[in-house]
Image 1 (tube, rainbow, N blue to C red):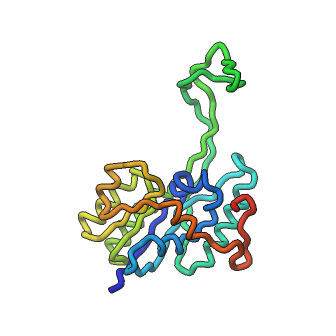
Image 2 (image 1 turned 180 degrees about the vertical axis):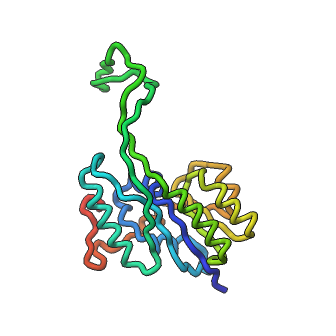
Length: 217
């Protein structure tokens, strides 16, 4: 018997935990990934991918490559991209180690500053939307099984509500092996996304007229 399933993906968490250091896996077919990992009885009704449009301030070519990826995702009838906001802001941060201008030669800047101004990239709103949608869809009876791809402890409470108050199954797919007891214990089941899963869930180099960025090969 098939189990109606909705998948909720924390896009930036997936990227930073599993894909940033593995460019060859960034051309990721989300539908294929879910089908490769989830139990065979999963009837995947929808995949919600929560992300934000990136800024060119850190990588000039990042927005172009991201738009290419979004076009590839649109070839799936069950994938929906849901946007938060991406912000770059300057803030002061306290130094914990000496500041060097030639690290290999260990030449330290003196006098040592206590604080420096840094540029910080922040994604806002996606995890909140994911948590709200997860709980709302559960209360509305849209799924029998929820699947959440994240390693963000902020999502522990929405997962707990769905599992304990709605008595619905929540499978947590973790993009890395870092143990987070509060997050893991609230899910019905936890599955680690292995590199083999990523390797076996890639789009073809060209799909729907959209080609994989050359730097992702």
